[in-house]
Image (tube, rainbow, N blue to C red; front, side):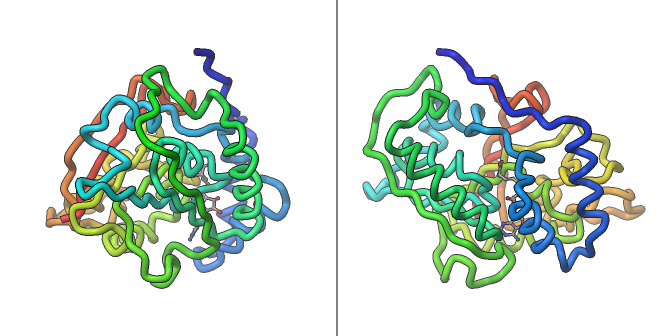
Length: 269
Ligand SMILES: C[S@@+](CC[C@H](N)C(=O)[O-])C[C@H]1O[C@@H](n2cnc3c(N)ncnc32)[C@H](O)[C@@H]1O
């Protein structure tokens, strides 16, 4: 199977993204994202294909992540900050009812267009070497909304949530709210799957993408605020709303995180 090249971010694009958010206050970050979509700047982060690490998890570790629940029902999965919807479509092709959430109307229409085309003739990049059709395709839908608004999914909860480059896109001051919204949106016993990126980036560096070394653990397992820089003198260790069940170094990931990305899978208590 041939692996298509990933759309890589140039160093210039990376610093443009950081500068764009430095110029905007945290309360205005939603419109700062919207502005990037409206001005056709999604190439600043878009990798052009679904996550190889998530594909392998779905195809090789059905013991961890199966699209069908014990009662025979298809599982609902949410992808917040879904961008062009590559992972949403790939998850539906693997049997989940997949929902993408995006703050930007342009982002949603771009994702809807992509999904329409892709579902008619799915590209090879949606599947890994262990692909076998085990269940019918699930559904694909997109919601335009703000993840931090309690009614963004109209009260719907999910069996699974997948986060890739959503937490790292948010200012560190928003991390505690990210964790508490995740706890609201996943059913008790449901899973939060995080492809942790960027872990190679020095914790003191600015973002997006904001460095996340140790951040998921602090937020989800310890119930901390996820702000690990500057270091606090008396870091209190508490209890979060999630328990980490698996911590996996994927064989394949995007080139930008290959060798450093980690997949962490947390269960909602
Ligand atoms: C770094 S991009 C990643 C997109 C996608 N996960 C990908 O891998 O291509 C972050 C995305 O989150 C969206 N976003 C930012 N804040 C959001 C919010 N509060 N609610 C929903 N989406 C948001 C942005 O519009 C952007 O598309």
